[in-house]
Every structure is written in C-alpha cells, then in structure tokens.
Length: 115
Length: 115
DNA sequence: CTGTATCCTTCAAGATACTG
DNA sequence: CAGTATCTTGAAGGATACAG
Image (cartoon, rainbow over all chains, first blue to last red; front, side, top):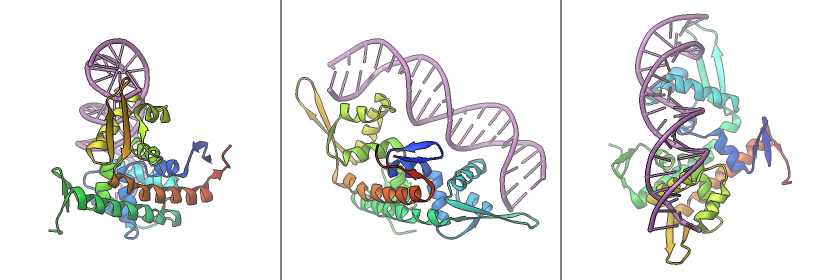
C-alpha cells in the first residue's frame, strides 16, 4: 500500500497511472524529453489540444513534481517548462511503450517510411 | 507514419496509447498477466468498474488483438480471457510503470508494508 | 506571451433491469 | 454465467473572450 497526499494506491502501477492518466500528459512529457519548452511551443505542438487543456495538464504535472516551471521576469513574459529528475525517469516508460508500438505495428500495421 | 485500420499514428508511442488508453484496460491486462481469467473473475477484481464497462473494454482489447476470448460449450456457460502473444509484451510496459511508481513513491510517498 | 473565465457540448461510464 | 439494453449523469474538454 502506498499513500501520497491522502490518496492510496495498491501497487506502483496504479500510482503511475494516476500521474500519467491520459494521452495529453504523456505527450507533454514526450516533447519535454527533447528539452525545455515554452508554453507557446507546447501549445503549438498539439494543435488538437486546446490551450486551456494544456494549461490544466501542465499544472497537474507540476503538482505531481513531474515538470518544473520557470518564470522569467521579462517583457513579454516567458515561461519555460522542463522535466524534473523524476519526470525524466518516465523516459523508460515511454521507451517501452515505443518498443511495444513497434512490435505491434510490425505485426498488425502498415509501417511506412516518413514521407 | 504507421497506419492500422485506417487510423494513422505519427509514432509507435501514439499507437500504444491508442490501444491502452485508459486505466481500466491496463488493469485488465494487469490481472490477465496472472493467467487466464473468467468474465466473472475480472468483474470481481474491479468492484469499482461496472460489468458493462468490463464487457466493453474486453471487446476493445480483443478487437486490438491484445486478448483472446475462448468460449466453452458448457452449461452454465464459461468464457475465458487470456493475453495474446502480443498482449503479453505489454508486460514490459507494465513493468517499467511499476518501477517508475516505486521510484516515485520512494521520493514522494509513504510506502507501507502490505498490511 | 501566458494564462483565466465562462459557457456549452459530448461522451464515457454508472445504475438497473433483462436475456440466452 | 455471461452478457445486452436503456436511461441518466457527471466531468472532460472545445470555443471564445478577456486579463496581467
């Protein structure tokens, strides 16, 4: 049994799922693996996700210590998001998901070279 | 670019996320890693998920070739669900999620021995 | 640029009852 | 036992406008 902020988890997998419980969060982690990004960059990386949702997911990820938010006192304002040390460990998870996706595609999909 | 059933994915991670896009599916895979299970067993393993949802998720997982459904011509009827070969490969993904959860709990949670 | 605030739609999932 | 059939609701997320 694991307890975090009053929430209880029966196993570490359940905990992990609670942190990255949707696609948008995983995608955000995914692009942050490429280095820190500005709010604008993240929004543009997901045309299919609204700015509001991006804001919300970034907040949740920050609250869960997965990403770190840095505000630069400039005009115009600049805010950068980067993975925290623990956030970077999600790379392993993403990596296995990548491998699985490749195996799956090899078996059931039509993979094409990047066009 | 990967194409499966008219759907297009930009990377294998996106494909994987499309297959296991919610907690309930991952949990189903999780308990099936312990061997084949009957419909009833799966339902009872998730008191918080309704039978209807379990049915739906099982169908989706079967359509995606992750699990295999076997019907025994008996009275009363018996149906068993088991992971397919590709489904078993999800164990690696679950495994890294487990590791991440442990690291995370060690840093931010209060872990207690099973009571 | 980096957000907030509001309204609104839609869709997943719960409750419940019924069937082969 | 292993589902299917309705009905309903709640919350997530889109569109849009506005603020610091």
